[in-house]
Image 1: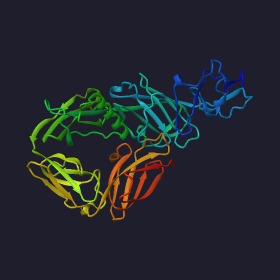
Image 2 (image 1 turned 30 degrees about the vertical axis):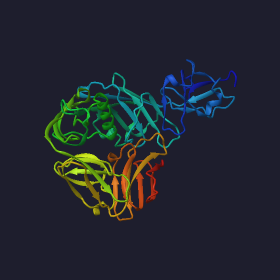
Image 3 (image 1 turned 90 degrees about the vertical axis):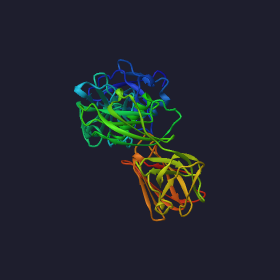
Length: 461
């Protein structure tokens, strides 16, 4: 194909389409990110593209031009000199916040189904043709305008958000279908409010937080999972010495603040509290805790006969704060009365464990606690992933055990796609699913040889 070329023209008018970008496609992806700095080739101002150097790669390349649908180059014939591009609609999303000011840097993500954790893409993204769950994305400029390209009219789920802003209505939280047309759409945003809590002033930085508990003193909206996660990441980056960061949504665009009470139990026995205003994220300052009481502490070891190390929780009966503890490991715990539980949820068969409650008395030396689980137990980490590598969606996990008990876990209790479950020896049936995707079920025999981690991949519907 020495000296070969391709002229891009409008499918209807036959007029040249200038400066078409040629980009690499990804067969396993949901979108193609349009980054002018990483394009494979570019047509000239007359719409002509020289094929020299890319003729062997045409099968994996697509053509993009503003106002047009993506067009694959895989079907270009050896002697072909023209390729027609079909026009798309161009939708401009106007993002505005308090007092109607434009919001720059908003992410607009559009898909045929709700995205519970839509990606933050810095560049324009166009849905990849032929995939099950295509996705389009754009970011708002200084005028608050995000321009969607390469999309056909129809009903979609629209997600509009930023680290410090979230959409006020279901229409732009991806919860309902929205008709996308050529033209303009306006989106009202409310600020995400936050707070950050740190150690009491003058306290040794080596002191750790064992547990915390909060109570809201004002009414707030609970932002979507992805908005809350991005907001907390923003606060942790600004306050890397914070023990706890919080993020909630304003009830409306005019709400500027509210307050929250935080209680903490520290590793030196200090019981602390603080009240902080919930303010826009860029105004959050670190709130130091105040000591209300110093509890005596004692080293504790919990042992389970016939079982390896597992994670348990000690729930303080006064205040209900929860302290994680590992069996077989000495941990310094404030003295008091506790209830013994497993992380996230009670384990199958744990209703028969003895004791259910423990009293850690004052004293010196290690205080031993022997836990009778009625038989050996094992901790299994259930780790989930998606066959669609571009998915990052919340998952639901449930476990049915041959002992007759069942447990279930919601997305908010599953961290980074994994959760640790304490299971007695026997047969367990594990169910994993995600909204909008397939389901997977696996039977597992729990015993001495059971793998510590179970990997489950959710299929694409």
